[in-house]
Image 1 (tube, rainbow, N blue to C red):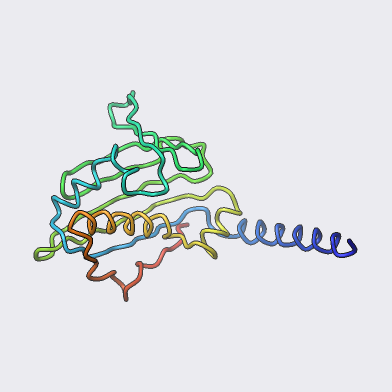
Image 2: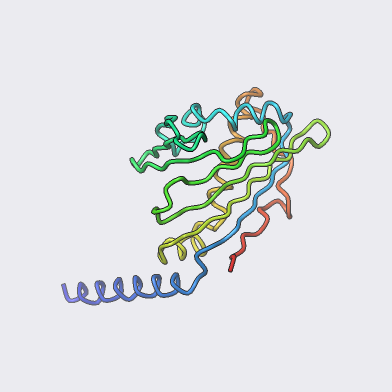
Length: 191
């Protein structure tokens, strides 16, 4: 039991370092991920714009329910497998071309908007997802910067989308490339 105080002290020091480093990082960021998929824009749009079916292909989501929006915009509540709920508002919807959504609750520790753009490239579709986000809690900033990556939500969405499109096409891998050297376009902090 002599090691217990040392272990507790080390954990406290680690927590202070994580919070301190996170506090020095900018809260606002932008991350962009782009992929060229072997599908047409209409097929990709059909999956991306069907919010009610997101739990079928996004494993982290337990449910998605449309709510009446007082602003005249679509508002959907997404609940993840851990029970956390967030309201997502659709700001722009140009079928087959562009979708802009944002977190409708400005009091959450993570807020932001996501823009999905589709462009036909030959018989394929380039899908670019841009996150303009703000991480208000220093520990979230630390984890996003040094553990998961600021572009993790965008990468996860495109990975899930790609799996869904692959399954729809008979299970054959359809990813042709991920721009910027087979990786995401680097996330960057905003002032």
